Amino acid sequence: MNTSMPINPSHGLAADFAACVRAITKLAMPVAVARTGMLVLVIVDTAMTGYFSSAELAYYGLGQAVFMVCMLIGVGMLVGTAVLSAQAVGAGSHSDCGVIWRVSGLHALALGALFVVLAQGGGYFYTLFGYDQDLTDGASRVLVILTFGLPGQLLFTASILFLEALNRPGPGLAIMVGANVLNAVFNWLLIGGDLGWGGAGAAWATTAVRWLIAMAAVIYILRMKDAAVYNVAGPLNEARLLGRKLRRLGYPLGLAQGLESAAFASLTLFAGLLGAEAVGAFQIVMNLVAFCFMAAIGVGTATAVHVGLAIGRGDQRQMMLSGWGGLFTISVFMAAMAVVMALFPGSLVQIFTQDPVLLAIAVPTLLVAAATLITDGAQGGLMGALRGTGDVWIPSALHLCSFLLVMVPAAYGFAIWADIGTPGLMMGTFCGVTLAAVLLASRFHLVSKRPVARL
Image (cartoon, rainbow, N blue to C red; front, side):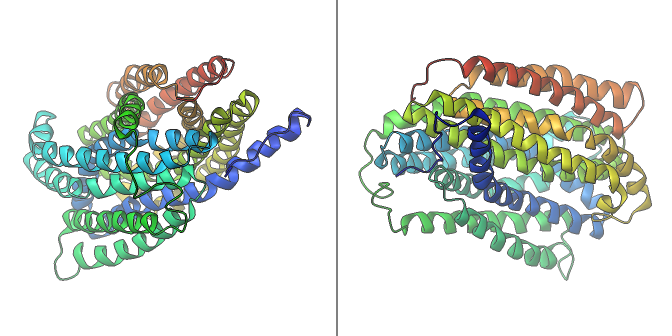
Protein backbone atom coordinates (compact mmCIF):
# COMPACT_ATOMS: atom_id res chain seq x y z
CA MET A 1 0.00 0.00 0.00
CA ASN A 2 2.26 2.78 -1.30
CA THR A 3 1.09 6.34 -0.88
CA SER A 4 3.82 8.31 -2.65
CA MET A 5 4.72 8.83 -6.28
CA PRO A 6 7.73 6.60 -7.10
CA ILE A 7 10.59 8.22 -8.98
CA ASN A 8 11.93 6.36 -12.00
CA PRO A 9 15.74 6.69 -12.16
CA SER A 10 15.61 6.23 -15.91
CA HIS A 11 13.71 9.50 -16.30
CA GLY A 12 15.45 12.85 -16.61
CA LEU A 13 16.18 14.84 -13.47
CA ALA A 14 13.81 17.64 -14.50
CA ALA A 15 10.93 15.21 -15.06
CA ASP A 16 11.54 13.48 -11.74
CA PHE A 17 11.78 16.80 -9.91
CA ALA A 18 8.50 17.94 -11.48
CA ALA A 19 6.88 14.66 -10.41
CA CYS A 20 8.02 15.29 -6.83
CA VAL A 21 6.65 18.83 -6.89
CA ARG A 22 3.28 17.57 -8.15
CA ALA A 23 3.11 14.83 -5.51
CA ILE A 24 4.03 17.23 -2.70
CA THR A 25 1.57 19.85 -3.93
CA LYS A 26 -1.24 17.28 -4.14
CA LEU A 27 -0.81 16.36 -0.49
CA ALA A 28 0.17 19.84 0.70
CA MET A 29 -2.94 21.62 -0.60
CA PRO A 30 -5.54 19.92 1.63
CA VAL A 31 -3.05 19.82 4.52
CA ALA A 32 -2.43 23.56 4.19
CA VAL A 33 -6.15 24.30 3.98
CA ALA A 34 -6.78 22.20 7.09
CA ARG A 35 -3.98 24.01 8.95
CA THR A 36 -5.38 27.29 7.71
CA GLY A 37 -8.68 26.25 9.21
CA MET A 38 -6.96 26.05 12.60
CA LEU A 39 -5.61 29.54 12.13
CA VAL A 40 -8.94 30.85 10.86
CA LEU A 41 -10.30 30.04 14.30
CA VAL A 42 -7.83 32.58 15.69
CA ILE A 43 -8.32 35.06 12.85
CA VAL A 44 -12.10 35.05 13.29
CA ASP A 45 -11.65 35.45 17.04
CA THR A 46 -9.31 38.39 16.42
CA ALA A 47 -11.55 40.08 13.86
CA MET A 48 -14.76 39.70 15.84
CA THR A 49 -13.08 40.76 19.08
CA GLY A 50 -11.44 43.73 17.34
CA TYR A 51 -14.78 45.00 16.09
CA PHE A 52 -16.23 44.58 19.58
CA SER A 53 -13.47 46.49 21.43
CA SER A 54 -9.84 47.52 20.83
CA ALA A 55 -9.11 46.91 24.53
CA GLU A 56 -10.53 43.37 24.34
CA LEU A 57 -8.42 42.78 21.21
CA ALA A 58 -5.30 43.65 23.24
CA TYR A 59 -6.30 41.17 25.97
CA TYR A 60 -6.95 38.47 23.41
CA GLY A 61 -3.73 39.20 21.51
CA LEU A 62 -1.52 38.95 24.60
CA GLY A 63 -3.29 35.82 25.86
CA GLN A 64 -3.13 34.19 22.44
CA ALA A 65 0.59 34.98 22.08
CA VAL A 66 1.52 32.94 25.17
CA PHE A 67 -1.02 30.21 24.37
CA MET A 68 0.54 29.72 20.94
CA VAL A 69 3.89 28.99 22.58
CA CYS A 70 2.26 26.22 24.63
CA MET A 71 0.34 24.84 21.66
CA LEU A 72 3.29 24.78 19.29
CA ILE A 73 5.51 23.08 21.83
CA GLY A 74 2.83 20.40 22.08
CA VAL A 75 2.47 20.15 18.30
CA GLY A 76 6.24 19.84 17.94
CA MET A 77 6.25 17.00 20.46
CA LEU A 78 3.73 15.16 18.26
CA VAL A 79 5.20 15.76 14.79
CA GLY A 80 7.02 12.44 15.04
CA THR A 81 3.60 10.83 14.56
CA ALA A 82 3.73 11.67 10.86
CA VAL A 83 7.41 10.83 10.47
CA LEU A 84 7.18 7.40 12.14
CA SER A 85 3.90 6.53 10.43
CA ALA A 86 5.19 7.50 6.97
CA GLN A 87 8.36 5.48 7.40
CA ALA A 88 6.28 2.53 8.64
CA VAL A 89 4.04 2.73 5.55
CA GLY A 90 7.06 2.98 3.26
CA ALA A 91 8.51 -0.14 4.88
CA GLY A 92 5.20 -2.02 4.70
CA SER A 93 4.72 -2.15 8.50
CA HIS A 94 1.15 -0.88 8.45
CA SER A 95 0.13 -2.33 11.80
CA ASP A 96 2.67 -0.09 13.55
CA CYS A 97 0.74 3.00 12.48
CA GLY A 98 -2.25 2.52 14.76
CA VAL A 99 0.00 1.96 17.76
CA ILE A 100 1.91 5.14 16.89
CA TRP A 101 -1.40 7.05 16.73
CA ARG A 102 -2.65 5.79 20.08
CA VAL A 103 0.66 6.42 21.84
CA SER A 104 0.71 9.89 20.32
CA GLY A 105 -2.86 10.54 21.48
CA LEU A 106 -1.94 9.67 25.07
CA HIS A 107 1.03 12.03 24.89
CA ALA A 108 -1.26 14.74 23.50
CA LEU A 109 -3.67 14.53 26.42
CA ALA A 110 -0.87 14.47 29.00
CA LEU A 111 0.88 17.48 27.45
CA GLY A 112 -2.36 19.43 27.24
CA ALA A 113 -3.15 18.76 30.89
CA LEU A 114 0.33 19.94 31.90
CA PHE A 115 -0.14 23.26 30.10
CA VAL A 116 -3.55 23.74 31.72
CA VAL A 117 -1.83 23.60 35.11
CA LEU A 118 1.02 25.93 34.05
CA ALA A 119 -1.40 28.50 32.61
CA GLN A 120 -2.89 29.12 36.04
CA GLY A 121 0.20 31.21 36.79
CA GLY A 122 -0.17 33.35 33.68
CA GLY A 123 -1.01 36.46 35.68
CA TYR A 124 2.38 36.38 37.38
CA PHE A 125 4.09 36.20 33.99
CA TYR A 126 2.34 39.27 32.62
CA THR A 127 3.02 41.17 35.84
CA LEU A 128 6.72 40.34 35.64
CA PHE A 129 6.78 41.66 32.08
CA GLY A 130 5.62 45.04 33.37
CA TYR A 131 2.07 45.34 32.04
CA ASP A 132 -0.50 47.38 33.92
CA GLN A 133 -3.09 45.55 35.98
CA ASP A 134 -5.85 45.91 33.39
CA LEU A 135 -3.82 44.28 30.60
CA THR A 136 -2.51 41.62 33.01
CA ASP A 137 -5.98 40.62 34.21
CA GLY A 138 -7.52 40.55 30.74
CA ALA A 139 -4.65 38.63 29.11
CA SER A 140 -4.30 36.05 31.88
CA ARG A 141 -8.05 35.36 31.82
CA VAL A 142 -7.92 34.67 28.07
CA LEU A 143 -4.81 32.48 28.45
CA VAL A 144 -6.38 30.25 31.10
CA ILE A 145 -9.55 29.74 29.06
CA LEU A 146 -7.63 28.92 25.87
CA THR A 147 -5.49 26.27 27.58
CA PHE A 148 -8.61 24.36 28.67
CA GLY A 149 -9.01 23.50 24.98
CA LEU A 150 -5.37 22.50 24.45
CA PRO A 151 -5.69 18.77 25.24
CA GLY A 152 -8.43 18.53 22.61
CA GLN A 153 -6.39 20.50 20.08
CA LEU A 154 -3.34 18.28 20.55
CA LEU A 155 -5.40 15.08 20.30
CA PHE A 156 -6.83 16.38 17.01
CA THR A 157 -3.29 17.21 15.84
CA ALA A 158 -2.04 13.70 16.58
CA SER A 159 -4.99 12.27 14.68
CA ILE A 160 -4.60 14.34 11.52
CA LEU A 161 -0.82 13.79 11.46
CA PHE A 162 -1.56 10.07 11.46
CA LEU A 163 -4.09 10.45 8.63
CA GLU A 164 -1.76 12.67 6.58
CA ALA A 165 0.99 10.06 6.81
CA LEU A 166 -1.50 7.67 5.20
CA ASN A 167 -2.10 10.32 2.48
CA ARG A 168 -5.62 11.01 3.79
CA PRO A 169 -5.78 14.74 4.52
CA GLY A 170 -9.45 15.05 3.50
CA PRO A 171 -11.06 14.17 6.85
CA GLY A 172 -9.03 16.78 8.72
CA LEU A 173 -10.02 19.38 6.15
CA ALA A 174 -13.72 18.51 6.40
CA ILE A 175 -13.64 18.63 10.20
CA MET A 176 -11.98 22.06 10.18
CA VAL A 177 -14.59 23.49 7.81
CA GLY A 178 -17.33 22.49 10.23
CA ALA A 179 -15.26 23.76 13.17
CA ASN A 180 -14.98 27.24 11.71
CA VAL A 181 -18.72 27.48 11.12
CA LEU A 182 -19.37 26.51 14.74
CA ASN A 183 -16.70 28.90 16.00
CA ALA A 184 -18.24 31.86 14.20
CA VAL A 185 -21.65 31.07 15.69
CA PHE A 186 -20.23 30.63 19.20
CA ASN A 187 -18.28 33.89 18.85
CA TRP A 188 -21.41 35.76 17.83
CA LEU A 189 -23.13 34.50 20.95
CA LEU A 190 -20.26 35.00 23.41
CA ILE A 191 -18.15 37.97 22.27
CA GLY A 192 -20.99 40.45 21.89
CA GLY A 193 -24.65 39.58 21.96
CA ASP A 194 -26.37 39.48 25.31
CA LEU A 195 -23.30 38.14 27.14
CA GLY A 196 -20.67 40.58 25.85
CA TRP A 197 -17.67 38.59 27.15
CA GLY A 198 -15.26 40.08 24.60
CA GLY A 199 -11.89 38.31 24.35
CA ALA A 200 -12.86 35.79 27.03
CA GLY A 201 -15.94 34.88 24.99
CA ALA A 202 -13.82 34.27 21.91
CA ALA A 203 -11.53 32.05 23.97
CA TRP A 204 -14.44 29.99 25.33
CA ALA A 205 -15.86 29.55 21.83
CA THR A 206 -12.59 28.24 20.42
CA THR A 207 -11.98 25.99 23.42
CA ALA A 208 -15.34 24.27 22.92
CA VAL A 209 -14.65 23.80 19.21
CA ARG A 210 -11.22 22.28 19.87
CA TRP A 211 -12.74 19.50 21.96
CA LEU A 212 -15.41 18.84 19.34
CA ILE A 213 -12.88 18.43 16.52
CA ALA A 214 -10.83 16.03 18.64
CA MET A 215 -13.84 13.79 19.17
CA ALA A 216 -14.73 13.93 15.47
CA ALA A 217 -11.21 12.90 14.38
CA VAL A 218 -11.00 10.01 16.82
CA ILE A 219 -14.40 8.67 15.78
CA TYR A 220 -13.44 8.86 12.10
CA ILE A 221 -10.20 6.91 12.64
CA LEU A 222 -11.89 4.20 14.71
CA ARG A 223 -14.53 3.74 11.99
CA MET A 224 -12.21 3.64 8.95
CA LYS A 225 -12.91 0.70 6.64
CA ASP A 226 -9.30 -0.43 6.87
CA ALA A 227 -8.92 0.37 10.58
CA ALA A 228 -7.88 -3.23 11.26
CA VAL A 229 -5.07 -3.02 8.68
CA TYR A 230 -3.56 -0.09 10.54
CA ASN A 231 -4.28 -1.62 13.97
CA VAL A 232 -6.06 1.45 15.38
CA ALA A 233 -7.84 -0.59 18.07
CA GLY A 234 -5.84 -3.82 18.26
CA PRO A 235 -2.83 -4.96 20.29
CA LEU A 236 -0.37 -2.27 21.37
CA ASN A 237 2.66 -4.10 20.01
CA GLU A 238 5.96 -2.41 20.95
CA ALA A 239 4.07 0.59 22.37
CA ARG A 240 6.90 1.47 24.74
CA LEU A 241 9.50 1.32 21.98
CA LEU A 242 7.38 3.49 19.67
CA GLY A 243 6.69 5.88 22.54
CA ARG A 244 10.43 6.29 23.10
CA LYS A 245 10.94 6.94 19.38
CA LEU A 246 8.12 9.50 19.41
CA ARG A 247 9.64 11.30 22.39
CA ARG A 248 13.14 11.15 20.90
CA LEU A 249 11.81 13.02 17.89
CA GLY A 250 9.43 15.12 19.95
CA TYR A 251 11.82 16.64 22.47
CA PRO A 252 13.95 18.54 19.95
CA LEU A 253 10.98 19.32 17.70
CA GLY A 254 8.96 20.57 20.65
CA LEU A 255 11.95 22.63 21.74
CA ALA A 256 12.37 24.05 18.23
CA GLN A 257 8.68 24.90 17.90
CA GLY A 258 8.65 26.33 21.42
CA LEU A 259 11.69 28.49 20.79
CA GLU A 260 10.30 29.75 17.52
CA SER A 261 6.86 30.51 18.93
CA ALA A 262 8.38 32.05 22.08
CA ALA A 263 10.48 34.29 19.87
CA PHE A 264 7.42 35.44 17.92
CA ALA A 265 5.41 35.79 21.13
CA SER A 266 8.13 38.04 22.50
CA LEU A 267 7.57 40.37 19.54
CA THR A 268 3.92 40.71 20.58
CA LEU A 269 5.09 41.39 24.13
CA PHE A 270 7.48 44.05 22.79
CA ALA A 271 4.52 45.57 20.97
CA GLY A 272 2.80 45.77 24.36
CA LEU A 273 5.57 48.10 25.49
CA LEU A 274 4.54 50.43 22.65
CA GLY A 275 0.90 50.57 23.82
CA ALA A 276 -2.39 48.70 23.56
CA GLU A 277 -2.99 49.98 20.01
CA ALA A 278 0.39 48.61 18.91
CA VAL A 279 -0.52 45.19 20.32
CA GLY A 280 -3.79 45.12 18.41
CA ALA A 281 -2.17 46.29 15.16
CA PHE A 282 0.71 43.85 15.45
CA GLN A 283 -1.68 40.99 16.22
CA ILE A 284 -3.53 41.77 12.97
CA VAL A 285 -0.28 41.70 10.96
CA MET A 286 0.87 38.47 12.61
CA ASN A 287 -2.45 36.84 11.80
CA LEU A 288 -2.02 37.72 8.12
CA VAL A 289 1.57 36.46 8.08
CA ALA A 290 0.53 33.29 9.88
CA PHE A 291 -2.29 32.79 7.37
CA CYS A 292 0.29 32.71 4.58
CA PHE A 293 2.61 30.52 6.65
CA MET A 294 -0.04 27.81 6.81
CA ALA A 295 1.05 26.98 3.26
CA ALA A 296 4.57 26.39 4.58
CA ILE A 297 3.20 24.08 7.25
CA GLY A 298 1.24 22.19 4.61
CA VAL A 299 4.22 21.87 2.28
CA GLY A 300 6.52 21.05 5.20
CA THR A 301 4.20 18.26 6.33
CA ALA A 302 3.85 16.90 2.79
CA THR A 303 7.61 17.07 2.31
CA ALA A 304 8.25 15.24 5.59
CA VAL A 305 5.79 12.52 4.55
CA HIS A 306 7.34 12.01 1.11
CA VAL A 307 10.88 12.11 2.51
CA GLY A 308 9.81 9.57 5.15
CA LEU A 309 8.21 7.29 2.56
CA ALA A 310 11.37 7.40 0.46
CA ILE A 311 13.51 6.54 3.49
CA GLY A 312 11.17 3.67 4.38
CA ARG A 313 11.84 2.25 0.89
CA GLY A 314 15.56 3.01 1.07
CA ASP A 315 15.36 5.39 -1.93
CA GLN A 316 17.94 8.15 -1.38
CA ARG A 317 17.40 9.78 -4.76
CA GLN A 318 13.70 10.31 -4.15
CA MET A 319 14.42 11.56 -0.64
CA MET A 320 16.70 14.27 -2.04
CA LEU A 321 14.28 15.27 -4.79
CA SER A 322 11.38 15.41 -2.33
CA GLY A 323 13.26 17.73 0.02
CA TRP A 324 14.33 20.20 -2.66
CA GLY A 325 10.95 19.89 -4.38
CA GLY A 326 9.26 21.01 -1.19
CA LEU A 327 11.55 24.05 -0.98
CA PHE A 328 10.76 25.02 -4.58
CA THR A 329 7.00 24.60 -4.07
CA ILE A 330 6.74 26.79 -0.98
CA SER A 331 9.07 29.47 -2.36
CA VAL A 332 6.89 29.98 -5.43
CA PHE A 333 3.70 30.18 -3.37
CA MET A 334 5.09 32.58 -0.80
CA ALA A 335 6.45 34.86 -3.52
CA ALA A 336 2.92 35.18 -4.90
CA MET A 337 1.53 35.93 -1.43
CA ALA A 338 4.22 38.57 -0.88
CA VAL A 339 3.09 40.39 -4.03
CA VAL A 340 -0.56 40.36 -2.89
CA MET A 341 0.37 41.62 0.57
CA ALA A 342 2.54 44.42 -0.82
CA LEU A 343 -0.14 45.57 -3.30
CA PHE A 344 -3.17 45.53 -0.96
CA PRO A 345 -2.03 46.19 2.62
CA GLY A 346 -4.87 48.56 3.49
CA SER A 347 -7.61 46.25 2.24
CA LEU A 348 -6.16 43.30 4.13
CA VAL A 349 -5.92 45.18 7.43
CA GLN A 350 -9.49 46.48 7.08
CA ILE A 351 -10.72 42.88 7.29
CA PHE A 352 -9.91 43.14 10.99
CA THR A 353 -10.56 46.75 11.97
CA GLN A 354 -11.79 50.14 10.84
CA ASP A 355 -10.05 51.93 13.73
CA PRO A 356 -7.91 54.67 12.10
CA VAL A 357 -5.25 54.40 14.81
CA LEU A 358 -4.82 50.66 14.27
CA LEU A 359 -4.83 51.11 10.50
CA ALA A 360 -2.07 53.73 10.71
CA ILE A 361 0.13 51.29 12.64
CA ALA A 362 -0.75 48.03 10.89
CA VAL A 363 -0.46 49.07 7.21
CA PRO A 364 3.25 50.05 7.21
CA THR A 365 4.01 47.02 9.40
CA LEU A 366 2.32 44.74 6.87
CA LEU A 367 4.39 46.20 4.04
CA VAL A 368 7.56 45.18 5.87
CA ALA A 369 6.03 41.79 6.67
CA ALA A 370 5.59 41.07 2.94
CA ALA A 371 9.38 41.01 2.59
CA THR A 372 9.67 38.18 5.14
CA LEU A 373 7.33 35.72 3.45
CA ILE A 374 9.63 33.95 0.99
CA THR A 375 12.43 33.10 3.43
CA ASP A 376 9.93 32.40 6.21
CA GLY A 377 8.20 29.86 3.99
CA ALA A 378 11.53 28.42 2.89
CA GLN A 379 12.69 27.73 6.44
CA GLY A 380 9.35 26.10 7.24
CA GLY A 381 9.55 23.81 4.22
CA LEU A 382 13.17 22.88 4.91
CA MET A 383 12.36 22.06 8.52
CA GLY A 384 9.75 19.61 7.21
CA ALA A 385 12.30 17.96 4.94
CA LEU A 386 14.73 17.53 7.83
CA ARG A 387 11.97 16.13 10.06
CA GLY A 388 11.26 13.52 7.44
CA THR A 389 14.85 12.30 7.64
CA GLY A 390 14.70 12.12 11.43
CA ASP A 391 17.37 14.83 11.77
CA VAL A 392 16.02 17.00 14.58
CA TRP A 393 18.60 18.13 17.14
CA ILE A 394 20.88 20.20 14.92
CA PRO A 395 17.96 21.92 13.12
CA SER A 396 16.59 22.78 16.57
CA ALA A 397 19.90 24.38 17.46
CA LEU A 398 19.84 26.32 14.18
CA HIS A 399 16.37 27.62 15.10
CA LEU A 400 17.73 28.70 18.47
CA CYS A 401 20.48 30.72 16.82
CA SER A 402 18.22 32.25 14.19
CA PHE A 403 15.19 33.19 16.26
CA LEU A 404 16.33 33.75 19.83
CA LEU A 405 19.85 35.01 19.22
CA VAL A 406 19.20 37.04 16.06
CA MET A 407 15.51 37.79 15.48
CA VAL A 408 14.52 38.79 19.01
CA PRO A 409 17.44 41.18 19.68
CA ALA A 410 17.17 42.66 16.18
CA ALA A 411 13.42 43.22 16.57
CA TYR A 412 13.87 44.90 19.95
CA GLY A 413 16.68 47.04 18.56
CA PHE A 414 14.74 48.21 15.51
CA ALA A 415 11.43 48.72 17.32
CA ILE A 416 12.51 50.13 20.69
CA TRP A 417 16.06 51.45 20.48
CA ALA A 418 15.77 52.79 16.92
CA ASP A 419 12.18 53.88 17.68
CA ILE A 420 10.80 52.47 14.41
CA GLY A 421 7.85 50.89 16.21
CA THR A 422 5.99 47.82 14.97
CA PRO A 423 7.56 47.91 11.46
CA GLY A 424 10.87 47.45 13.31
CA LEU A 425 9.54 44.23 14.83
CA MET A 426 9.03 42.85 11.32
CA MET A 427 12.52 44.01 10.26
CA GLY A 428 13.93 41.85 13.04
CA THR A 429 11.72 38.98 11.85
CA PHE A 430 13.21 39.24 8.36
CA CYS A 431 16.71 38.89 9.79
CA GLY A 432 15.79 35.78 11.77
CA VAL A 433 13.84 33.85 9.14
CA THR A 434 16.38 34.57 6.40
CA LEU A 435 19.24 33.25 8.50
CA ALA A 436 17.16 30.17 9.41
CA ALA A 437 16.46 29.43 5.73
CA VAL A 438 20.15 29.61 4.80
CA LEU A 439 21.25 27.43 7.72
CA LEU A 440 18.54 24.79 7.21
CA ALA A 441 19.22 24.57 3.46
CA SER A 442 22.89 23.93 4.22
CA ARG A 443 21.93 21.28 6.76
CA PHE A 444 19.61 19.43 4.36
CA HIS A 445 22.32 19.50 1.68
CA LEU A 446 24.61 17.60 4.06
CA VAL A 447 22.00 15.19 5.44
CA SER A 448 20.60 14.26 2.03
CA LYS A 449 23.98 12.86 0.96
CA ARG A 450 24.11 10.33 3.80
CA PRO A 451 22.90 6.72 3.41
CA VAL A 452 19.17 6.49 4.26
CA ALA A 453 17.94 4.41 7.19
CA ARG A 454 14.53 4.04 8.85
CA LEU A 455 14.28 5.21 12.45
